[in-house]
Length: 242
Image (cartoon, rainbow, N blue to C red):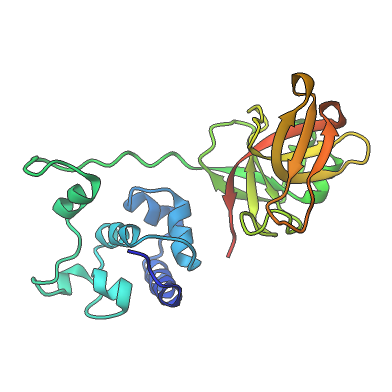
């Protein structure tokens, strides 16, 4: 069931206050709910999240579902009346499609291992020749699930990829992964040090031509020779700061 936008801010505030009262991080809540950090972050920024995710969070934190969703009733499961139970293992099994009558605990897939990666500014990316140059500049860190040992974050500048990626977001870039047509990429040209965050497409004889396409219709497509670029790295994640 879709949650109305007008309710999301109140839900976000309730969860954030509860998390801070318990001195938990976003990653702590994600681990308890058996998901990554990003879905919890989406709840607390009143972004895109499902009712099922809220129920998982309630079960993990032993919160009363009606309190988190509507602000009604007692806060904790232990205080809730018996006829209004919070989500339990049986309900989770049903949601996951486990056949009726199957005994035992429902085991969810383990949460991917998060790690911290360095973030560089847009200007730093424009001055870099390759990953080795970027590695010398650390402006902050963000969490990621990427397994690329050289993955880094980049602070987005401009609105050419809105609404998919907003200005000020941090994107995770994988320099050891080859960009494929249709990927969102960070591309840096050789001559003018221009840096682009665009959708990447190869075309022409042997794929020697490149078309960079924005999501924002105000920006027209750009075309280059593949040899015009110093590097083209695929984007594998987006992190939005509050």
